Length: 268
Image: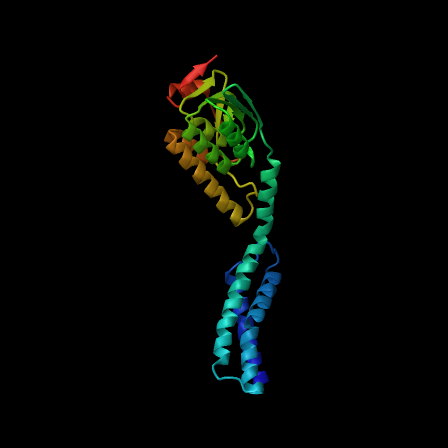
């Protein structure tokens, strides 16, 4: 009798696992549907093992009548945890790519002369720490920046630092993507007449092929657009930025930015 009951339970769990595999994609990295179904079956069978053990305790070892119910709850909890783990495994590659890309993006050249910091290059993971150290140790009044952009979260940190210290910013040649957040955070933004400003959507450093990457792309874009809107960038520019892919860039000249009141001063 016990063997029949165990077979029935395992058969039901097998059926449920196949139904689940057909409706929920727990294994986005697995291209073969049959392999995905097999992996889901294994998960369900592993999760049901405490319940089967509870039945065995009653019929073979004189366990308590409610023991299988307790074990069923345990089975459901284990199964839920295994499903959560399995669904996160395919995204480990995306997370590791993001971490590597954040390191590989590099750091700008940062120097200080008198009361002016010069920043030339990408906004990397350590850029905020480097700039803050210089500002803490010196009476900084202005920043000259040329940057293709970089990490949005770091740009937002630098933005708050510049706003708090009321530091002026000058763009010599180009300021793109997250760099615009830094530039517009100044209490006085100037640019040379040959300078350009670049705009586009935010992007995930981990790529765009997984649902996690797509989610982080959206989050990055939302954060950047919200910050630029708060800093006074007009909606028509932001709308065009949202329509521009992370691999592309649309530019406005310093003269256009000045004519629209986005920057405060043009210099030769």
